[in-house]
Length: 410
Length: 109
Image (cartoon, rainbow over the protein chains, first blue to last red):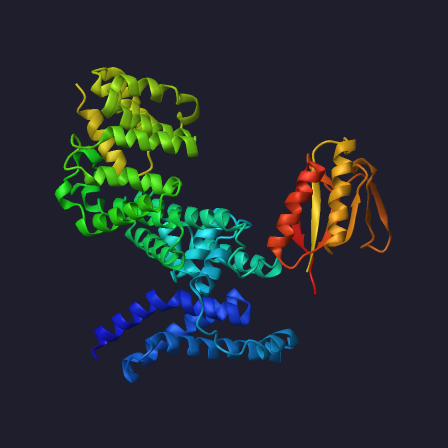
């Protein structure tokens, strides 16, 4: 096997096995810190050994066994420094867990622990990317544009809190499950959005690493909880958004809005998969949650040949549904954008202006107003709204697009 | 595992009769379900005295150790299997006493 093949095998094993190894060790040793460190050591050992010894026939089992040994080594070392408790822990649950049902997958326990509501949202994101996604601390720091030490401390503190306050390592009971799943999905959606519309003046407008990771983890949740409609909805939403990625930013680094995108460059395979998930949810005949509705809206857009062929009445109807579930002003703003296509910019502008109190500090509010005012031929007011939007926008590609539109005003 | 559930309050008003009744119901439940360790309400911060005997001679100072808008008005110590159980109980406690609460694990086994 060539060096390149071994490298690929290690990368694949990291993607496929990292969370499994951390999860299995956390269950066995009851300690996230030990599990994380041992998993990292096992992968480092693989990098050292596989090129010479060859890739083992079952990389996952090899990694788990190696990590187990590393963990036991560490615990023995610490026991020598007189820690009787851990010795006791070593005595039980010495068998590898047997085949388990879907809901019993250790990775699911890991996800629920990392996304526990007693942790701050930023901590949940960092911890999930580290423990479940296997991203290294510097990668997480780069993705969120924060100092490595800050991410490291956040993760260390979280592990200490999980241990000291005894945040449980288990899938929540049926009664708590819906709320807790929506907490997990919220973490993944935030990771995705940070990748999709990265903020910061010097950052790439799109962070592919975060997007890929969010999709991968959402696929995992979907596989582990196939009955959950919102997990399917979120995955569909991510896929249908990701499908338009190349069309979304122009060669000159400008954000391209939906109406101006070259639909021929959309990823047909991702769209097909997204549409399949949306159809599956429609067939389930269960009242959809917000991710399913957002995915359905995305499905309407990605079904249309061009912006004129879009079924705008369907889009507005879906937004009406969404507003009833989530009366946030941002949903109302997006609804108004669809209303502009159905009932004209005048009607939409009136709806947008009603949101001023709540959204005056949000760049998309001003960008939407600017666009509607431009379409109504009110250039001066449109220019002022573009100025405000440019001032507030944090994404470089979006700023470029807004600036061009402003400068094209009569 | 034991948790300290602190009751946080921002005025010196005592619990109302309705709040007291709800707290009693909640305490009875804690006892019946084996979560009860201890609970008490505290006198207002102005009744506190700070003592510093690190220097060998005790120094007494009138008032709480830190002046703040919010202060500790009372507490529970609860027995709970893990934080999920403690958080659920604390949420019910917050509702019963009609105040914010903070949950912290006690150290040691």
